[in-house]
Length: 493
Image (cartoon, rainbow, N blue to C red):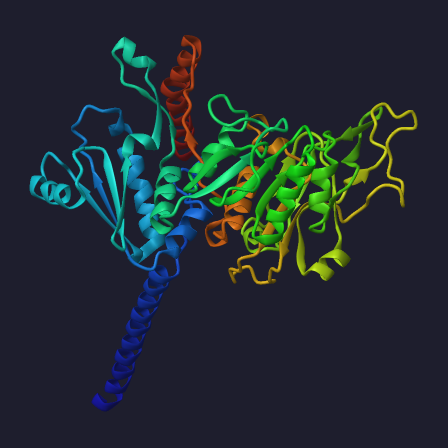
């Protein structure tokens, strides 16, 4: 009997042991997968803690660790104390993204006096608070934490603290990381003298100018009226919405520059007559067509004309692949572009469409207003799908954009209003900035750029505040009590 009873007990012990072992294996496997393969999702309305694609790419470009030292004290009476929490959260996300590439140290200058003296001796700075030091590979950059936010100072007149209106921490930090990664600051010239928007204070393209400068690039206006060549320090040039045409001398200068190593971004104004500029573009395989991209929309009692074009970004280049799936709404007039492949083959030019109009749009050649016969697509006369509205031409380029070749690069867009502040969209800015980074041979750090997180105040009247108080303090507790009484009554019955 003892032998018979020992067998089941041994089997039970073995079974329990196997179950415990399986549980430990499952526990270890789940923890391993959780630590190695995880995703962080920002569910906030403004995506406040989600890093942009460009920031993540910039971090991955560093081959050596980046040491970030934050010097700030929460005890100081300064508007900066309002954003210290946001700065910490931003740096935490950057550290999660960079892993071992990012090393962060927080220093309170009122307590860590020895460490402060050590840093001041190494980096030679005097400001003892609200400072971020970035250091990598014997290069360093300094950031004022106050530059990471916009404050409304008007409440200080009533003795109240300043009000935070926007947090620009990721923009400022990414700009500093780019300058740390690429110390040389390249110059992007904007052509002037043909009705293009001016730069500087009050510029209608101030947002675009600010974004470009945050890519560690300098911007400056350029007039060819007194020049015989494009400046030698011109890393790239932008021609934005010219109202008037180039003269013959300017045309020759621009053509010669593009045949050597010119880098040019052209955003056209379809309503302007610029045949010489068109000839420069056509010589590189991109021909602006005399049409207007539009579509018709059926309304209740009529047919409407939609002139705001929905552009779909094509994954034909390295930088557009990172924007794949995004659409851009082009306000104002838009014209289509024709790619002359035969010319490109003869001159060894690589032509690629970058943005294509959505399927319902076509290029209307008879676009004069108030047409008596109405607007409709005429096969063989109008330009049908596929309809290119942005394209690139690389003279002597290769298919693989990861191979950096010193070639001439041209990017043309058949519209320009989306670059102005009044019509600017995040997707449009991302495309323009990615195009410029591609022209600067910085395609590896192109992509969706960081945006400012704006704060808003909810202004409620006394009546609305009273309703909210009544609902939260009386209605909700009363409803809960009523449900409890009903449940008790049913159980008692």
